[in-house]
Every structure is written in structure tokens, then in C-alpha cells.
Amino acid sequence: DGGITQSPKYLFRKEGQNVTLSCEQNLNHDAMYWYRQDPGQGLRLIYYSQIVNDFQKGDIAEGYSVSREKKESFPLTVTSAQKNPTAFYLCASSIPGSKETQYFGPGTRLLVL
Amino acid sequence: RKEVEQDPGPFNVPEGATVAFNCTYSNSASQSFFWYRQDCRKEPKLLMSVYSSGNEDGRFTAQLNRASQYISLLIRDSKLSDSATYLCVVNPRSGYSTLTFGKGTMLLVSP
View 1: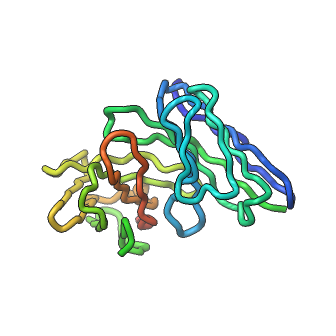
View 2 (view 1 turned 90 degrees about the vertical axis):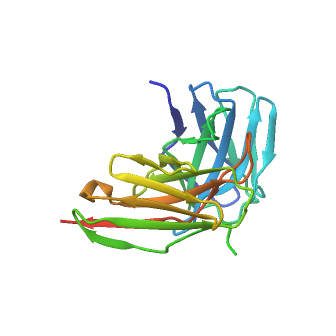
């Protein structure tokens, strides 16, 4: 089955620790995205990548980093510089010519201990 | 004005009711429009795209009014399984782009 997978489902971070969230897709989509969702809030864009080895900052990139070494993978690192990392993190992907419809993975919940 | 604004909700309706969600967007150059559905603690899933001529998918009807920068979603004959949060989503540019999400409106359908 084609789709987007994210792991882990739950992640706990200690103070001062960097953690990495995984996002993999086998849909052959060019573009991939990372969003953060807080309770009662809309999704906010962290980073996005339109092609391998290239990515751009979204609206709330501070405290986060990404890489795009393979088309299928777009991992997100939450660094210790992100002071309020507790949130629901969603990865998405899209293809050109599809009116930019984005398809989401199941998400990772990050909690700070 | 917020980029994408939705009714705050929640909407509580009985089974079989008709319910309408409204959404306004601030960027008049926006190109594409969508409704997504998000179940509690799950990822958003595409419900339907919204076209200028309006479009229907079973019990769901979406309308777009570019002049008023307004989008709507109508659900007829509500089912218990329709209970979810409905997200209005706008693409401000053509081509590869990032989407702007509304905060969502929660729908609770009761027996």
C-alpha cells in the first residue's frame, strides 16, 4: 500500500535534548512538508521541500532543522532551541498538477518530560 | 484579518440534520481551495476540493465565491460518523506552494 508513515507515534523529550521525527513516503511525491498543530490551533508550517537536497523555512522554523537526502524521506529534528516543542507534528507530501493537494501521515505527538 | 477564518463551533446537531460551515480567506489571489476532515487525534484527510462552479460529492456540497472570498461546506442528512473537525484550506499561489489552514470547526452529531 502506498502512503506516508511517521515514527514514532509518541516521543518524549528531555530538557536540552534534540529529537528526530521520521517521515517516509512511497507515493513518489516530489514535495514534502512538516506542520505543527497545537490544541485549538490551525496547522502551522515548519519546513517544506520541493525537491531532493533543497528545503525552505516555513512560518515557524526556529528551533527546528530538516534534511532531504532522499525523495522518500524528510526527517525533522526538534532541537533544544525549540522552547515549547510539545505539539502534534504532521508530515505531508504532494505532487505537481494535483492542485497542490497534500496527503498527511498519521502524526507524531511530542511531549516534554 | 486572519488569512483563513472559520466559524468557531462546535456545532451540535442531531442525526439527519443539514449543517453548513463557512470560511473566509484574505488573499484575493488564492488559487486552490479544499475542505479537510480531521478526526480526534488523527491526521487531516482530504474531504473535497472546492471548484468555482461548486461541486458535490454525495451528501457533501462545496461552494466558492471568489468575489466575496468565501467558501462553504454543506452536509446533508448528517450521520454520527460525520462527527469531526472540518478544516478550510487555501492555497495562496499556483504551482508548488504551501497551504494555509483555518483552525477548523468541530461538528458533533448526536443520535
